[in-house]
Image (cartoon, rainbow, N blue to C red; front, top):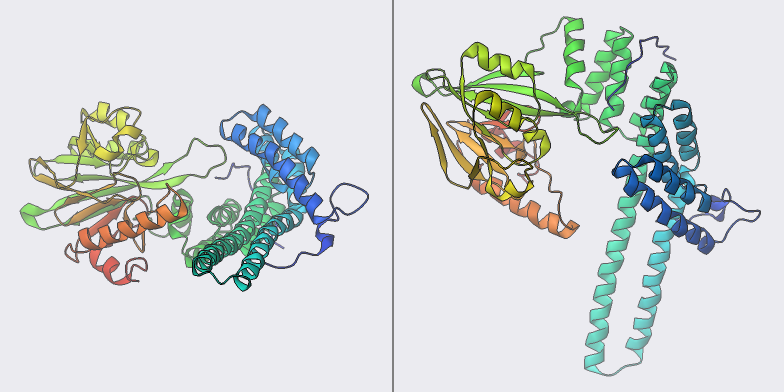
Length: 484
């Protein structure tokens, strides 16, 4: 067992169910499945109200609603989890620990209830199917037969959707249990029970090897205990899971310095494309964006300064965070920032727009189709195909909607600033709309990338909104989303 002594630090934060699954529910007798579902539905009404209040930051109101839900169903693990969150935010870590332990103790009963609800829905489908089959056997009418066939087709589609939803819910519960265990680790850390916290993070990683925050906190505990070899091993394990872009880069840089390793490219990177008179210099800054929502971990976003080394004219792309390094670089290089360019409207790419626009006296240029989402209207709206020209610096606008309605890429010489449209080994996430609508938008986004970006020369440097740079050639041959 590993024992850690470190200083305190706030870390970033369809099977048949046996009847015994419900034996922990309140009452002298085990409830029937129907009674258990009724209790869940009654509790969910209060839980939903509590969750809405929590999202608005109305924590007293949220706690009241969640407690009312627990009175209907004491085993409602999700309600207990959010009560733990509220106590954590209020720094009542002992109460938070009590709530999260209750949530984990009742987790499997909650999962069983959810699965039971799925089974009940499928039973309804089976009942309708039996009715249709009886109707088929008793009719000789072609019209009625066609109507029955249509009904059966819709039923099969509904059954498929229910089964798919059940599978996804089961996967969700698996990830949820890992996250609850991770959160328990955070609480234990705040109570200075470091070894217990470490074990929780290990368990969270076992349950969900892709839980980046649990990996980050394992590395952090080892680093703070000055067990640098262990920290490096944990870092390599996380990167082997494909989590390199989700790790705490500031922690990684500190670990590399402690190990005597080069830190180039972790938080800052110099890039160059073109030759002689056509050369474009680029500086990539990985900025730590901290969402306003409580308990949501930091997110690293790339902001770029692209400039002509002869004229010193520059553009600043996607300044999501105010960062002294960026200002110092512009000053030391003697650059004249001509414009602030946004690839899309999300806060992690636009958060420092106003600050840098005022600091450099430069206009904010943003996608026309995202403009309605800006709190401060952009100075110039950009559309597909137009060109921005500054002395020694020419930028072409390429529209690639998908991640947002108006997502843009900027092509400067042989450098493509792709925002959240194209990443190394991946493409942007589509978030809005129903599942079917998102799938359709994602298909259009893939076509847009293939037809509009992958036709660029293979040596074109891709500078994405998150993660490391890549090339068009590499993505054309090895990006798993685009090579299907």
